[in-house]
Length: 258
Ligand SMILES: [Zn+2]
Image (tube, rainbow, N blue to C red; front, side):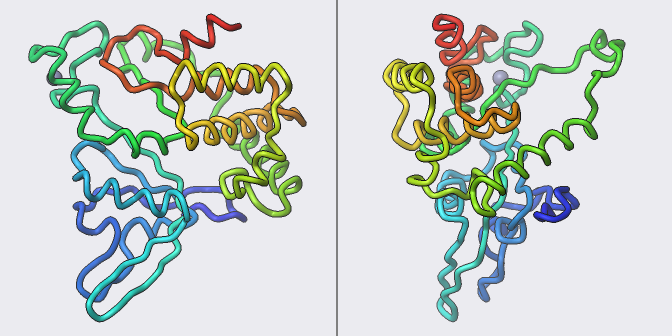
């Protein structure tokens, strides 16, 4: 589990069937989502989960709690987890991979991706394509910055958040408090407002971009949220469309405005 004092993940990789995600059995025992409290909940092959199960995750994603109702019990469990999900571009997994087209056509990708609802994806702060590893990639030298160094940067950013936010990280901040600590520069706000119109951001999406930009600013040890932090947060919030390897809407917007 991810705990505030250890800053590390020691468990929780979800491979369980849909039914155990929120609760287990007629006695409403906590499911994987609650067991991931203060940890990471990983959903592999996201579209394979039913729409009902994914939509029921909206409550804990917003409030950090899950309420389970049973004939013999009505229980609220803590469930403040970091959600990480993975999915193939299409059901057969080949669409867009290194220029390979899915033999079933674009429809395969569109059908597969549409199994995850827009409101659910709206709650995902970071949405990125991860290209398949090629044999040439394996021959490359290791990155200069390894996991240990990255973990150090993340821990430093968390310390900054805790000190500024009175013991809370950015993810836990109430909206009014977030607006206060993540007030962007003039240029940053202008970019965010333009992007909200161009990309059709929802009110929730707007605040999620702001929250992510605040964290990006903390990672770069910047006291204020600048335009580049807003631009990077927007570029990480990929509009879900097709499976072309061309830059996404947000990235196009970023390049156009930078
Ligand atoms: Zn396919």
